[in-house]
Length: 390
Image 1 (cartoon, helix red, strand yellow):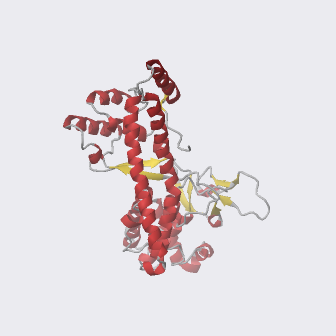
Image 2: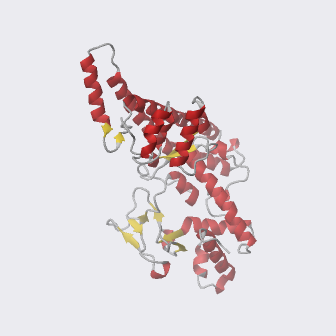
Image 3: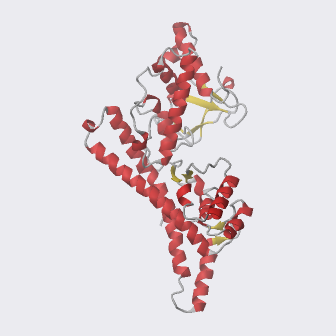
């Protein structure tokens, strides 16, 4: 009685059935070795207190907020299924089973029709190393054919075996495993996000232009709803061929004529509308990113102020730990927002210098403009992003 898209529920039901068999279960020793109820990290979403305010905790992390909201909704649905089906005797046992599956499950043959989820005794004790892993889990077949952990780099005697759990950002590690990870360098899969209020972005447009922009957004993003914010994930959506830059150009259009020049290309690659138009689009994007950075900094400040008061400033130690995790999450996500913002500023600064005629030599102005376009315009890809590392 479980939908095919919910392998977590099915595996949790199997685990609970074996647990209820007790010593009669073939896998009783394995079940006994698992963390007991109450031993999983209290910062895992399955164990968050009911009075936790997500809007406060993730005020500066749109990425964390989206993952937290999804995890809580999924958890509530899955717990309800386990209870209503009789698989779990109570809420606590249902959450224990789901936390076990969530944090210890292995995916076999991912992204295929035969994808499956399984618990793998022994291998589920191996920790992850976000930047120092030397093993990978890439089973070629179903669980019945075994679960090999492949060594990709030499491992010294006495060195801990670590493998990559997957392409998880810090927010994803928190929501799935209940930790952020102690990295010896930046997480190569780090992610951040921000949202754009479409209604506000279109507020100053004439009615016909506003309607045309909405139609273009729906055409290129079928799931788009005018009342929902646009959500962009970094660095993915900032890459060539993804949504961030094309959407900023669409919303920067000042006329239907400009918009029509973009729409035949499905927003990518962009039509050449001149550097002045691109300056308009980058300025809009910089405004969005500036707002995201401000929200991140404001939230970090409030979290640190609360943490400075110690445990006395929170209803429980669990609340304090969650706020500490949220503060650490912002520290890891902010550099991605900063990088993209600096990229915009880099482009805008170069454009300002190249397009400023300043009453000087007209020929020199033409040369500056030509040099700028040679550096920043690519016939195949369009306008290049800036260098946020500067």
